[in-house]
Length: 282
Image (cartoon, rainbow, N blue to C red):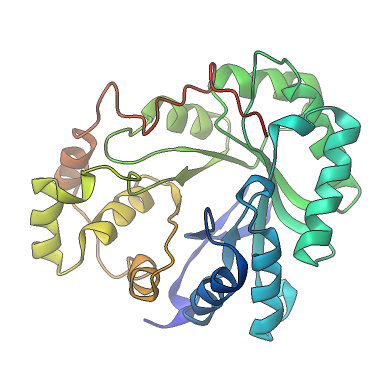
């Protein structure tokens, strides 16, 4: 696969984002730098990190070692829950930039809404202002439900460019996808393969693997792409990294898409992380 074959998606602010990215959860230290660097060498340009992942430094170091210009990359980081107050949010955004060793971030997200604390609108205002200051090119959210989206849009008049949510065959999260689409927001999928789940072993998935001569992960990632979703798979394996971006040379039929959709479960969340209840204490 040629590196240039990864297409781009256009965000509602006009910025372009690669159609698949590398998640860096639990990818840290020297080994993490090498894992990210191999991904870069294979064509990844969207690198998704977070202060809470403790991988911002590894991402920055891998970019520097690649020898490629910073402008070639699309770097995402996220606001931890303990920094939802306006001034704290502005400071930690700058800290993320310093840790990565860059002059700006391409995308910055509020990691969780934490509605019980009631500060996510204040945090969103900080992101809006950080964008105006040139610290961040695009701003968005993660794990936001429709009511959370409407609250921040109504308060600031600014619609997020991205909403990154849990999404995989056991949790297709159609409500969030529809809500994002209605508001012109691009949906990203975290844990797109279903972390620790058996989705990769489902018969519909394995049958499609045989039909298209792709592995189970590639079938699921293609399913995301055809739904209009930007998947962020995490992998430290060189082979898996290469396979995960090799999904743009085949298409699933409408019936095949629907069959995968039908794997959805009412209790399909990986760790039952309901955004209205989940408390991120870091």
